[in-house]
Image 1 (tube, rainbow, N blue to C red):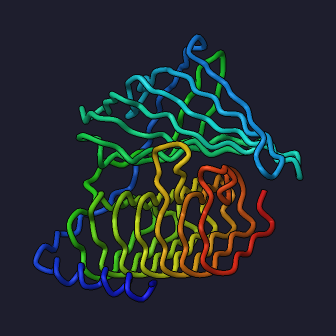
Image 2 (cartoon, rainbow, N blue to C red):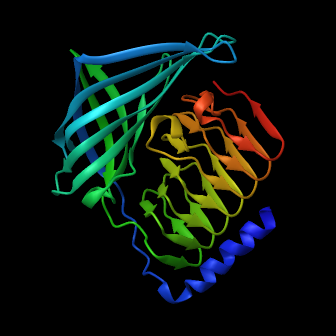
Length: 308
């Protein structure tokens, strides 16, 4: 089945050869700050115990973003899952602020997801992206801090156009740059995310391996990867599928997976992997599909150790 699927995708890529798109140049993301204030009257909380004996608390609440500098403005709806692990006593957080009618400082409008990844006793980080309307190219990463009921999101934001259509050949995301694949894009070749580079893919195809060694933020949602996927030593959040929150569908990966040493926040959930999967020494978030509605399907041996 795996061989047929890869051959089919290769045929599709060849058939689309006349539709090559010019490579959109990545850009270094620039500083961005916005605040978010929630409305306590809208809070709804439910709790359940999963099959592992872990206690999962789901909270929904509404609020609004306000731009401080190069940020987002608009109303949002939050869904947060907190899981208290029975075996370790540690708690992880995954969730999303979906700004349903947002605007950035350039006047781009639409909905956009601010995905939350956190661990008890640590800072919650976010991946901002997976947007609609004219916000589709906005993507960034933020760290959250709270005081007097106001949460401040401080980070970086990029707005350069994502790659669309078909790009043939290797794609290199240079150190410090931010690059993205738009929904429906086909990257016909390997992807190399260099140290400190930021990479986002939503609803795309990558016909080759994806390697990210000590990258910045990595967000891969609803994407097919026809080759090994490696993300190691990231200095910003790593989001590779999380269907439980509704903003990041799981991925199809036709090859081995290595997710190792990512310590700022890791969420690898709802993915289907045709090959072995290794997740070791990662910190924060739902490292390996702990939510029952976002389990991974792995057709191969699984190695997990040292994750916190």
